[in-house]
Amino acid sequence: MNYLHIQRAIFKKNSAGSRAIKGAVLGLLAAVFFPGALPLSSLGGNSAVITAYAAPKQEANPQKEASVYTTVGYVCRIDGPEVTVYKSANIKAPAVKQARRGESFSILGYPAQGWILVETDAGKGYVKLSDGASVLETTVQTVDKSAAARNQVVEYALEFVGSRYVYGGNDPRTGVDCSGFTKYVMENGAGVRLNRSSGSQAAQGREVSPENRRPGDLIFYSSGGRINHVALYIGNDQVVHASTEKTGVKISNWDYRKPYKIVSVL
Image (cartoon, rainbow, N blue to C red):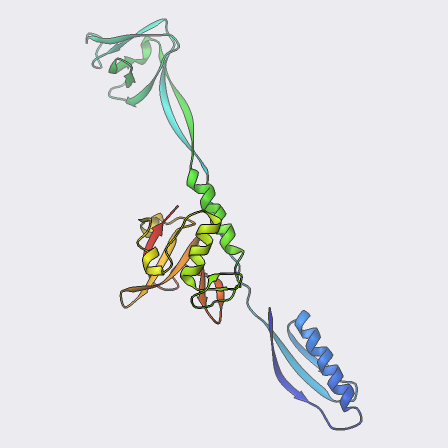
């Protein structure tokens, strides 16, 4: 939406007055589509200066949650026909088991040069690498089931940027306040039911530390020790929230006010 401010408009009352007004009106309409400082000349030598100011755009830079994490690990693989697993890192120690070619064990540590501590089906034991064992790197992929929900709720919430703020409102399509906004977004974007007020929403879910905040978390703000506002964290140090009647649903820095509490309900 563009807001127009008429800085100066002077028209003489003469035979060209109607044309001057017409030119100014056309210039005003043009300013809506071509914002900026536009000096206009009317048809009768009269002049009008109209300055158009465009409302600043609110641009989100949401951070998507990675849904798959890859971790690296190491295993001991038996390459020789038969390898002894000892109770200690000593070839004179009793045997835990005789491992056969193709078996692999999780590595628990490296207690001494040339030895590794492994976990076997017969218990913990020590393997001498030179006996016919090797260390292999493995990768394990872990799926974070909450990541998809977090990404979805952030994208859904951003659809309502610019919606009206209405105290007590419950639907961003018609007007909504801060806790009405988070309640609506969580229920319709993630299937999570929230209480109605910001204070009661702060008692739901689990509290997280600022350094562990993630997109989709709720950030609460207080005045005089009483919670009176809530916003949805979208990542990259930003929140989306139903702010005031003047601004409606907007994007702000997450610490535009001092955060009081952060809660995860996902």
